[in-house]
Image (cartoon, rainbow, N blue to C red):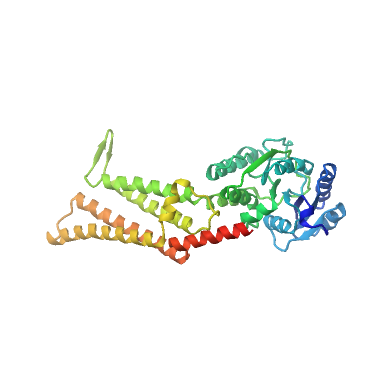
Length: 402
């Protein structure tokens, strides 16, 4: 292929690992669709170590084959994207489950201004037997709902493997996953960087291969879910942590004056212990969530707008100062109890002083957790506001240059 990148509008990229029975049909259907609709493009087969003649078949069918040296679905797609010459990159599997004759639907959206176009199997036609019921009615809808909730998207099928992305847009996303979760990371990074995602309905067919697919439903499903959770620290850590911290402290402080009767429920010291536990867990979760917000480069994880000021405020200096204040208060409370015990020659404690002791120990434990989070900020070299601003400016410069 000698054409320059500016001469090609579309590159169809197909990952391949021993797909001899089906690769020719995929390549030929894509080439035929581009020919019939006068689309200036190419088909790139990114081979991942095939030994069954897939490479020769793909070339004979009209594809340009590139050999990816790294194993993995995501690695093969990344290699193919880097080798592609088109302005737009359309990916699809080599098992004939996706109909490449539908590629004009994607390109029409791209020409209208969309930089990321997802296919939707759930809004199109699904051939009987093409998608197991567990995937169709549980796995894909649940993962899609989680993604939409965490990242503010409104797509219907996050697992669809046929999608189009503008080449320059893709390389600003920073997608790195080498495995099946590559597809989810594309959507997550696009949502975090506020790339509008549009959808087109597509048809989905049964796998035409005569062997077991590369997909491992439970393992790959967990990897997809894990990636979603990693990229939403505010939803999974900071906000739940702050909620537990407030509720826990409320329970602890409410018990300092003794038992509280709430109708048929009586709150006693056991609820103070529960509150102390919630407070410690909440402090750990919230402080770690804030550390991630302070250290991750801009545009790499999803943050809640309501917590933006908290992330800006939580620097190494403020975390260290907060830890010191909480520690001093905790030591003062327990020091008061110890002084009382020594002054009155070790009397038996009333429940009030027991509660005070628990409060002091709780504050000391919270202070230690906050101090550890401050150390993490310092170790990351982005803990101070000045360093974070330098990181954000560098990230912005790299994005603009890219």
